[in-house]
Length: 530
Image (tube, rainbow, N blue to C red; front, side, top):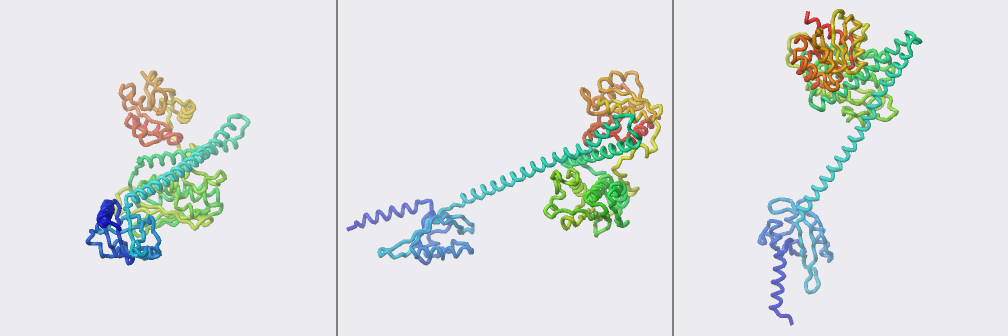
């Protein structure tokens, strides 16, 4: 016969174990009515024993999970146990918590199931950790994919850059070698060689300018010279500069320009660049005999420039990336169209700097494409003449009425002998007397007692660069302070231009040398001393 005292002791011990457990231990009948509620249940769910005993366990279930209790009770009635069921419950304060439930049926002395014992463990912290870990894993995966994509784009870009730079170089070097053969070359061949070399030099210059522009954009150093711009004239200038390429493919360019939408506030050079880039793309991707339509109109509070072509169109999967830098729809070795994939990225940035937007539309491959540039219509215009960028094409010497530099004594400091010889040939050809020097140190050694009408100096030279040279000349009074100085350099960044001006140069010209510009610049700055 059992000892009642012993039974009471066991019951007390069991109650102490239940109350000291870190998990919520709850007893309920087969209708879900709570019959027991330990201290951890009060801590986890926020309800006291008095608030829960005699109440339905369903008050802990969110509205969208009420059917879980029906399924649990059904399994309990069958004598089944529910192990480590992870779900969500509601605290008294309304906060949702994650719990892991283990529910066992309770039988009476006759073996009849009369209720259930439920152990609930708060796993909210664990779930939050797992969610955070999963989020970090997803971010890491996304970053890895982005890194792989960036690396792929970089590799494709470097391959494209190599191809785009080497292709014109091949033509330049090849025709230069043909010219080296000498007297057996007829005049037609010489003319053809000069034409090809000049055209490919311009192509390389354009590629380099795109790279420099993108660098300025990435460094946040691209600035606008804002003034009132005649968009009609800008569009006409861009069309004029692209028409030779269009004519070679028998591509017609149609204009629809509304004069009421002509004036905007912007940088004339950069707006010309935007329109020229869009036209250049349209010509490039439009087959022979195609049509390009350029329109200018006012739409509500903005001006719209539209360039529509009957070209190859844009694949629908590539359309969202058309303005990404270094991005091209076709990067294969069999692609039919060249370029670095920078032009449209530069267009987008320039348009946004003007407070506008640009969109691309296409029905897919073979349906042509449309690019629309929206620029804000100014409330008022500043007085004065609108300025328009004249174009990007360089004209050969024969098309210019060049100034005469007879009697001008020019000092040329250039460490590259080919470049020095070229400058001497260009300026000597219009009468100038050239004194060439091949280093900054040599220049300082031979300058004493000399008088020059102008200094033309490279920047990047060994031992003493052009910045140091001009600072030394200006600070030591080796030449008259009003002797003008031209920086002629392959460095084309805005900070190089700024440093040149600070160091003491009067004019900054970028290589490759534009013959007419160089002669005109020398004539202009030397005339100031008369």
